[in-house]
Structures are given as structure tokens and as C-alpha cells.
Image (cartoon, rainbow, N blue to C red; front, side, top):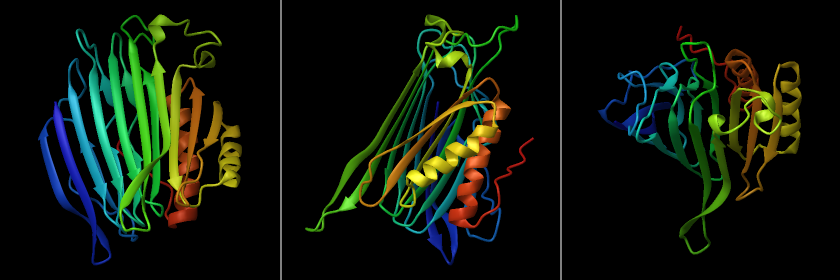
Length: 281
């Protein structure tokens, strides 16, 4: 079990934590600044090392207006056997006007007989910028067999908060992304299940600069990788648009390279930053 609250504000040209709280098996390491942009980098850690049955992790992150946060994990998130009940992570992300959030966790690994649910609720403003990448990979059982976890449910709900003429604020659904994988109940090698692939990578981008030309450019960027990729755009709400890129492969490293190429393009073009290299191992 674990709980983490992190609120990032802008102070004297630098993004800093203005509120920080943790309880149980979740916490963050001391902040880092990887360049001169003022963006702060925090690393989430789970000293317990893995998620087990009936575990519940609550993560609440707010990036205030104008602030910039890069949030990553210390290592892969491992889901072990969950007899009796699933493990669950609930994450709330809130982005203020002109804020930037890059969410770059290491891969999620589901081991034999694991069941996991991940619910992420994201609220952005029309001028917010979000880049969120994730890779899902099967663990390996002792006999060398892969992909024997029970179930993964991942749900991303993205809302755009806009101001109404009378001065009140309201939110509109931008995207609802549901993913359900049950490999033990499906022919994992067939066309009906992930096109015969075992690993999945996702990239979610929300920004006023997202358009069809960018979607086409990112899709073209993926063609040099050993993966099967599709890109979708959301409708535009309040001047902001969302993009979802989903890629299938048989390799964690290949998906990390593919998502890294996409995020590097966005980081350089939008933020003027170098490609991300967290050098954890």
C-alpha cells in the first residue's frame, strides 16, 4: 500500500515542490534539474519492490500554471501473483495553464497469475502540455514461458477544464482510453489477440500544437522500428487536441527506442530540450 501527493509550482524561474506528502510504500527521491530550462525531475520509488494482491497505490500530482515537471520511476513496476484480489494504482494528474508534464515511467511487468488495474484521471487546461509514455511487458515464468498473467486493465480519462463567460469553470471529456488484456483467456499467438505480439507501448500527448500533420510525422517516425503502430487524434476542445499512439512489438527495448524517438522529437521542437536519458542502469 502507498500514497503520494506532489504539487509543483513555479518560483523564481524554477519549478519546485510546494507540497509533498507520502505514506506507506511510495515516495520520491530528491529533485534534479537535468538542464537549464527550470524543469524539475522527480523519481518515484516503491521500497517494497513490487505490487502484490490487494495492494492499493494512490498518486496525486498537480502542476501549477507555468510549472514544468518530469516524473519517472526508479525501476520497472513489477506485478507479482495476486491471489484473491488484484493490485491497483489510481493516479490523478492536474495541469494548470501553460504547465508541462512529462510522465516517463519504466516498463510495467506483469508476472504469472498477476491481475492489475490502473486508473489515471487527467485534467488539463487549454494551454497545458502533456507527454505520457508507457510500455507493458510480460514477465517470464521459471520454465521460460511468457505472458501468463491473468489480467491487465488500464484506463486513462482526460478532461479539459475551460472557463465559461460567466466566470465559472467546467470540464469536457477529451478522451477515454480503455485497455483490457487477458492473455490466459485468449489465443496469445493469434490475429485476434494483439496481432500475435506480446509487448505494448503507448504514447499519449495533449497540447494545442497537436494536429494531423504531427500525427502523420510521428507515425512515419515509427516505420523504422520492429513494431506495428497506429495513431489516433481526439477532437479539439478549447483549442487543445489529444493524440494516442499505440505500438505492438515483441521487445521492450524496441518499444523504448520507438517511444524515445517520438518523445525526443516533441521535447526538442516544443521545449528546446535534449533527448531524455535518465541513465538509471
